[in-house]
Length: 307
Ligand code: ATR
Image (tube, rainbow, N blue to C red; front, top):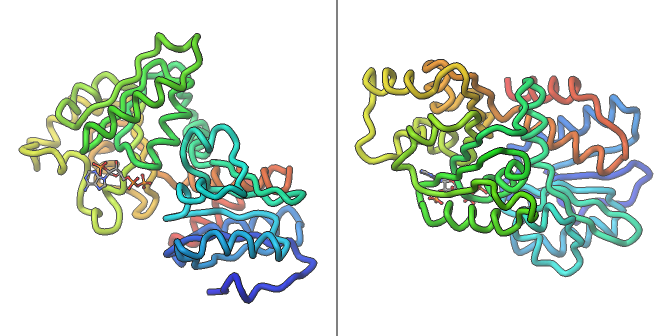
């Protein structure tokens, strides 16, 4: 893994992703495939940057002539505390920056995660405007998606293991709605009423880490005390996760979380987070280069890396 302190000046445009850990990042293969397809002489690398090194590493990248960076766990929220950052209005509101652009001495911050999720739904011909949306989770990922989708949904409900966190996020989003949208229903709560919430929703966005890593064998239903399991659960979910519902999970590794499996088995249309990853990268590429990237090339690069 390259170290940001060993990077030297060169004529090739430099980009990268800072994370801790970062070795799992698919951004290098994805972005390098896009630069290569566009015929742009650029190199994109992953750099392991510890939280306490974030500020100096961003400034070092700027001094070395980097054009842009992505930030991943755990830096997306932390970067907002630096005075040198000029976040755009959406990333400021969402409280997370995943893309930096270095230009004319400025360091601008953007959030392309939520836009990536929106484009991933559109890619599957799901149009969230005017739909009732249920968001599961109230952490950083939920925050940016909830802010963006609140603008176009007819109703938005956020549910979370810790109900107060969802209520607080809903109140925060509501307070940012423009005056003409203040009659929109935005609410938050816990998991207790999840079946009703699912029944009322057109699109369900799963934004927690349930289903990946140490939580691989869990779906949201496993986090609800005394929720049924086995055949009884399958029969129950068939009543609620019907074929008119879309279930989107931001997780892409594994390709199908337990929640997506259960939702698909019940009859809902399911979409994993792979194209969100591709589109958030495509939006970052566009911010840096002013050009559209080749989505199919980026998708292919990710698919091959995941296999
Ligand atoms: P991220 O930036 O990935 O969203 P985060 O801000 O730490 O990460 O938020 C994690 C989200 O996943 C939260 O909604 C969290 O619920 P709590 O607010 O109750 O902690 C949710 N989450 C994490 N582990 C969970 C678990 N085992 N069961 C249910 N929800 C979980």
